[in-house]
Length: 344
Image (cartoon, rainbow, N blue to C red; front, side, top):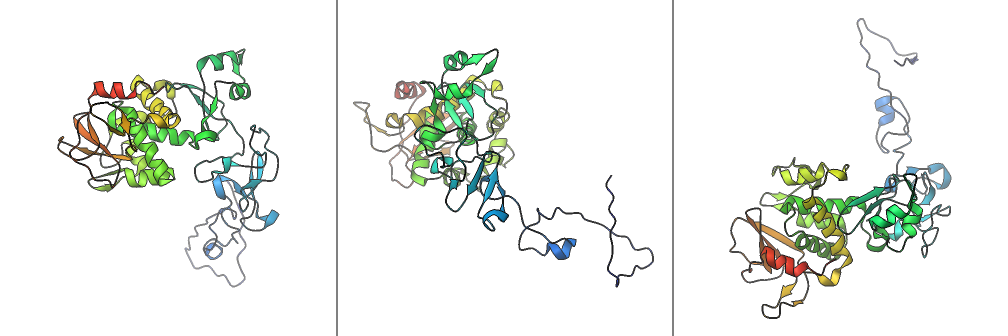
């Protein structure tokens, strides 16, 4: 228990049976612009966290002009760090941050590495630096850089088989898992590459990940809250989404179908020219044009789109949003396997 002596102003008088409720507030945590000095009796200095979850250091360069993280000093006006990157990346300025993509990448500590996957969606390891980065590599690379049970993640990053996925494609680990979670919620592992390419095409069209979900995550009742939908707590109570959500901090619990959705996200980003959601010539079976940017779900198969697939007893129609179509032909599971066989 904490005790504190409070001194009242001379004009203060107490009535009989008065009860006092005392609120103690860290003066660095009150919201700027509020009347917290009147509400709590403490002069507030403002909320102490700024851009990207980093702590503000207003005494260095004025209010809102300087942030501090564990491994950097950061100028949010320039988008540059003051000190050299302690873990530099070849070809990237040691003063740059977030790979010049601050809307898509977070790095609250100012450090580097992250989570490692292979192209089959298996989670190969985590270097325990909370920076939300993704690397793709293979199991052999992890094994060859492990000594006495400890992995040298710096050597893994430098290995020929390793791709800095976040640097190359501007997609973080949480964004990768969001996409996989969405795909699994929709199809429980069925035709995952159709969904993955549609999501990636939407990202290219809409520029940011947030807009992908704003425009794409809807049902007949309106827009859905992304995290509620994934957790199965929205009105739809999607049990598939919740099943994947429950593995996000425990990847060893993922089923083969879940691994396929993670793999689909990775492969769709790395193989843009093999998009199977494009129009397909019925005779030559060759793909042409642009790929789908979304899908619509119905209880029957008589709707318009580029094509549709039967998923979990429903019909999902893939299309470029805003484009006019005739009635969509069915693509079977066998056709899906044929359409995606070269995506590796």
